[in-house]
Image (cartoon, rainbow, N blue to C red):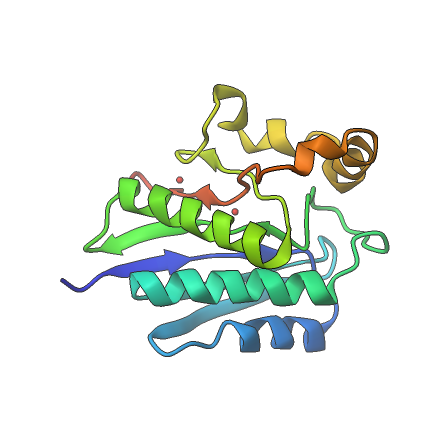
Length: 177
């Protein structure tokens, strides 16, 4: 059966077109199509909109997060938008042949792969949250990058296992890995 999933990763870079180009290039995979890309200098954030088959879109998201982590230094990042990582959110939206449950499973898979390949902690939220306090993205973002960096420095055990940060997103009537 054919599947179609939208993925709208938000990256903490909205001023350097070359970095955004490199992230988009990393996500070029057969079966994944770029629908849109927007850069916002004030927020220092870009939003990439992709659509593709279930397996291909997951790999594209993983590669995009990996490339962003190589290019974006949050210790030098300034912008109006709250952020937790180089890849701030990576929502999966079911379009055809997939359900919200499928997208939650995709978020879990992508989060696991990001941790295994890059040792980047990932937080699942909204429909994919594993605990009630992680349902609301604002709760996770409290303290932003600096807060989580300081907490990890004082409590390195927090990184023993991934804390999922990939969101299953549906902003239309039907909810940022």
